[in-house]
Length: 84
Image (cartoon, rainbow, N blue to C red):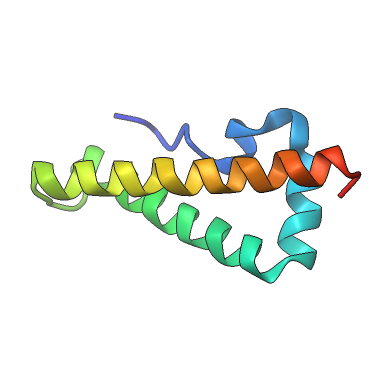
């Protein structure tokens, strides 16, 4: 069980200011971050046995979360490199 350990702030603890700035100023980033939070929450609920899902569904959600994390990480890194 993950206990929601995959929150964006926990994934990027050294980039909290960049994360906040991007959420506030970049619409596409905010949409991706919101989707990440939705997927992460769904995974947490399944792993905590609050919601039922097949193993395939859980794996698909985990793959989507990883893809979103990669995209968000690139955007955070790029924004940090240019001073947001």
